[in-house]
Image 1 (spheres, rainbow, N blue to C red):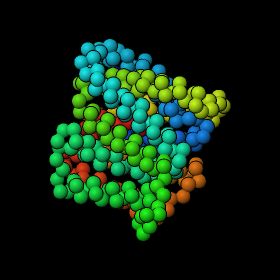
Image 2: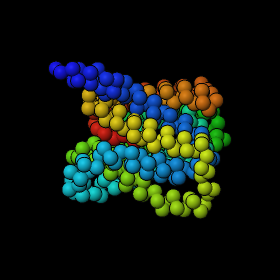
Image 3: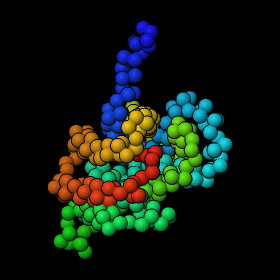
Image 4: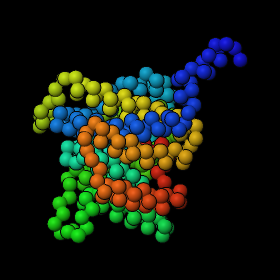
Length: 317
């Protein structure tokens, strides 16, 4: 090995690029920060505006390193263009817009602790679209997690079901998770293309799908002010939960596989709850911990059989 190769092999970037657990932890931290920054942006940047600008700038960032693969894979993309458009609209456009919308009405902690319920919607869509039947263990896991979701949404108040008022933001986010479940299942129908081709197309197409709503929002709600906090917010969501997180996640999966990478998703609410306490002053309550524990227990039980797991590459935050 030559001296230059030895130096390159010992460079910090090269070392980080070969540490899958660090890469996947960085991914979880970036996605957790998205919820916190989205909450900080609520009331300052309208949800469609934030989502559109996030993916538009992320597309511009990723394009220089991906355009060669897009050109190379364009025939395969065109062969499954309908599926690719649906994936872009659901996983990129709709899910993230609804997440930011929900944060106008609920705490960041609530959305973070509800996120592990996402695989349950994957199981439901798998059954509805592809006839994948649930085992008794999987059905029990789904039921257990749904109880955990209800604990969080209802603030643990099961004694007054008739009087409890559901938080609009929690319900919006649950619907967002339902949409993301559809995206996750449909990724099994994506063409066999390079990962950078996939993210470049979905970033760009997802942003384009938001243009009509973005134009409507410019007339319906106050325009975003061009001040330092708002610009920093746009910088964060475009760079970290979009570009950096996807690059780290894809590299981490390439090193250890999707199955071993999946448990790192559960670090998202852990990192996010800590960030919410530090930066937002939110305080978790007992029902948060009980609900989160039930959701995780249900996901663990349901995911013991691979048929309920999300297809490889089904990621978006």
